[in-house]
Amino acid sequence: MTALNRVPSLMARAGTASALTLAAVGGSIVLPGTAPEAAAATTATKALKVAASKKGAPYRWGATGPSRFDCSGLTLYSFKKAGKQLPRTAAQQYNKTRHVSASNRKAGDLVFFHSGSNVYHVGIYAGQNKLWHAPKTGDVVRLQKIWTKSVWYGRVK
Image (cartoon, rainbow, N blue to C red; front, side, top):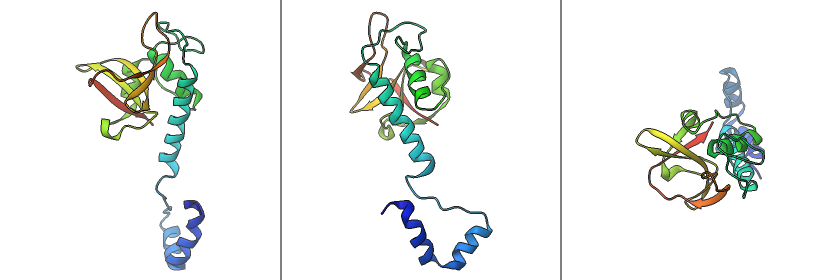
């Protein structure tokens, strides 16, 4: 039985008075793992799959796909295909995400490389301390181990 299928039985156990009170105050039933959190996870998963599907695509500065990318062009393209709009540059993308700690990072979060307060590179976290990214001129979109501790994580809202 899914969480959504349990709502009627939960309401039955809570009683009619509780259901009427809830309706009168305009409340809603929120189940963990549904609505915004689940939608964000689905979007992030889709974006991650899109980025992985671009494996081997050549790096080109300023490119946003579909066959060539720079780092923020890959993240912009991947999330756009998953239904979310991101700004163009890595720094702008960092400013538009919900910042999360390394211990709370999830596959599909953005990984921002920084020097001091300057964000200079971005990729999509793939789990197991790896990310999909478009590294640099002469390289291709690929999965790579995160090579530094100078990273911040952001979750697309």
